[in-house]
Image (tube, rainbow, N blue to C red; front, side, top):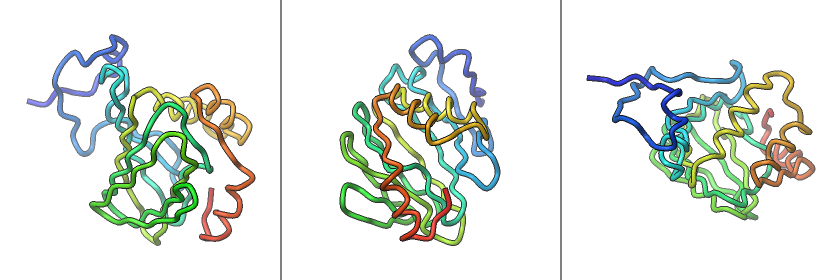
Length: 175
């Protein structure tokens, strides 16, 4: 028997029940043609240990500006497509089944490096930073570099738009 995802139960700080989130369940936020996010497990639901977000990335799309987290590590498990990532000074590429580790305090960004859609499971540990994604999605088309940077600052994330431009140009990306 499947238990439906219930965000109201997440405010209690721990998971209140076992559940299955089906492949076609869960809200996907974002506009078509942009990076869209499916929130699978929020940090509040895991007791703060981690969050799990599925990123859907259109072809040749940068998922985030160059940034670094001071409080969390990120693990990107590639489900489909080809994903590129800048990790410090190193550029790497991965495909389905590969895991890209982005440790806290390291400058990084990532993108769909292919001509087909890409999907990754993003594990964020500890949880909580997924709320920044929710805030950005709530702004919709009102999201700007300034508001993105302000949201990042509230979550201990530094953003570098100046050095994001050359990455977009080098790999022929949209953002």
